[in-house]
Length: 195
Image 1 (tube, rainbow, N blue to C red):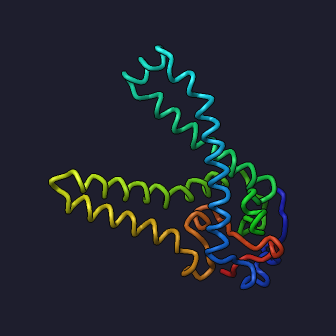
Image 2: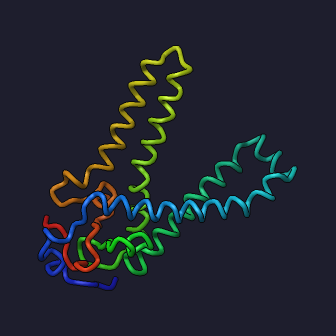
């Protein structure tokens, strides 16, 4: 594994390295729009097959095709983010907003760390979707209070995840902690928040 910088060099001048929430969110929105466009293109490529009788029958009996399609979209997202993170530490949105992802130990990001970061990055979005779904069910359910409480708790957990870097001592997001990485300003990529 190639070392980009020594661990000691990475931890120097740490207070200047961590970006703020708005920069993180702007970069994330930029990348999300690109991934959305890729997923729309992939959907258009799959649509002709979805209307064939063979696939309609398979989907009607097992539901497996829908799950396979959804997993495929998640894999596309991983290839996008993982590819950029492992090759240069920057996605297109990160380049635009002058951010870079680096490992805390100074080594280059590998595909395993990129997978951990990607899966951790999905957690708040899944909580957001879960909370929204539960609140929608609350409208139609006789047990509306239980759905509302669960939905609000899921949304609060998602909000906590999105705001976490602002309150974390090292300004690390959940996915940074999970993968042993952090975001830094690209002009100061040698600096990582101190332990």
